[in-house]
Length: 200
Image (cartoon, rainbow, N blue to C red):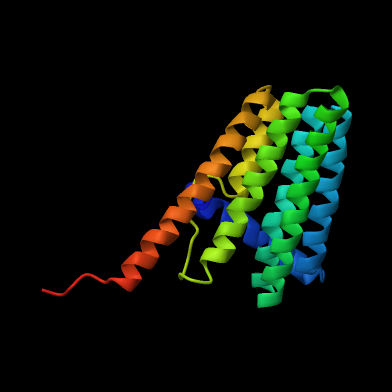
């Protein structure tokens, strides 16, 4: 959904940076792992309670997440393995970030927010899992309002602009809404494939 709003301007900037990085032999996997490391720093900042700093850090990590694919395309290095590697590392990044926040609330003895983080972690991983599982049966299942870029932007904005708790509640709801949306979308597509409309 986010790609529809950012349009060609961001793509143009990314492509320019990707060409520069490719000329200096920076590989897509290097950028992917760098993003993971930066997210680890963000997770530690959340754990220590430096919420604003953490929001800025995970935004910076998101830049690496966008650049790795652009560099792969610029250097003609796209591959099935690269896509798998990127997706797996993204899941580790998600776990680090949310785990850092969970650890912070647990340290504070806030049972309610700790429980909320468990709900968010469950929803976050279900969004990815449902898509991966669904696309074994249907061509595509990219529907929903809360894919990874949206989740990172919401969390970062909440961290930086002072609505951190509200952002977490929105994540808890929207991730599960997205997972359910993908489940019902998959069911409807499969029904349509099994029972195509009759031609008049």
